[in-house]
Image (tube, rainbow, N blue to C red; front, side, top):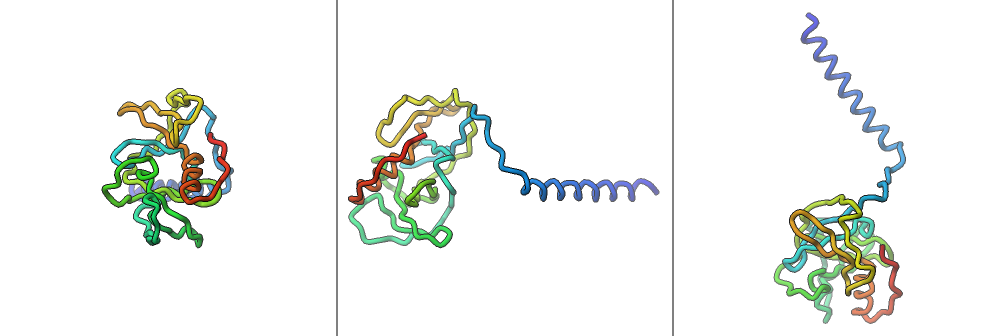
Length: 181
């Protein structure tokens, strides 16, 4: 008689332990990385592979509705709502000078102010790579800063602050460049 009852009790104890661990995880401070890794999103824009630093993003959203605006700026797709705020959405492929052949599916809400969303076509995966796999050339090359070495090929890293400055320049609003990471 100890078989079925002890098995059921064992499962109940395990579920209770998991529930307690889950609940207490919200009371603990957020973990920080040791500084020896970099977190990136591997994305595709304009048919080319890129990476975005996660610390330069505040959210990634698939299939978010974008309301078009009358504009002469090819890269401006329109505006989208994020937590009650209306944010301009720019096509990353167009900003990078690529032909725009399809509607982007993904939006990344950038960190920093003013709010800005960048639209891109493919979200490949999340990466946590050693700092040694990121080659920072020490300067900016337009809106790219450095390259991450990956087994499936190198990916240029998009510099979000430089991209934000480009958007402001295109819109005719001077905006001081943020410091890149």
